[in-house]
Length: 187
Image 1: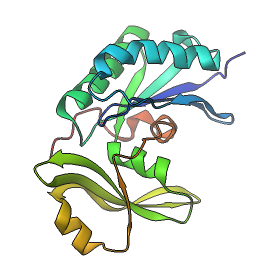
Image 2 (image 1 turned 180 degrees about the vertical axis):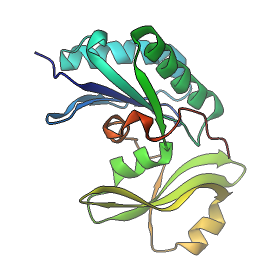
Image 3 (image 1 turned 135 degrees about the horizontal axis):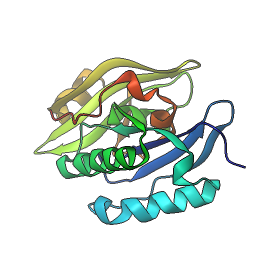
């Protein structure tokens, strides 16, 4: 029997399509993050269906959706937000947004660690944010910005670098959907 309050987290800002189902009191029900490169639009529905099947959850069991709003790939961000909004409208769900780089930090950092989550922004630039994972969750030390890769490396030579890391959509699923609007962030 599925959990009563099932929340979907998803992100498509980078080369991975990250999806997770989470329920308070139960935790992560299922998650996946295949590398799809530029095939987010073609893969999002089949991957969502497989995720729901993995967890034994029906779409009608969903109560909220939190989607990564960027920064990242313009098309990838738009695909994720459009899918989240469409599903939310069809199922009468609340939808909210979350920083896409935070999902990379959540997936790549162990409790007590700090690191730079980054996505390639082309022409020698990265979308980057500095995060610390602690027992209470994730703390943003420096918010997402678009900066020259070399400049970031020079400013933070000893900080762990998580470039194009695999995002963990459970961080999005755990966030209250009303925490942030599901509007794309382009830097």
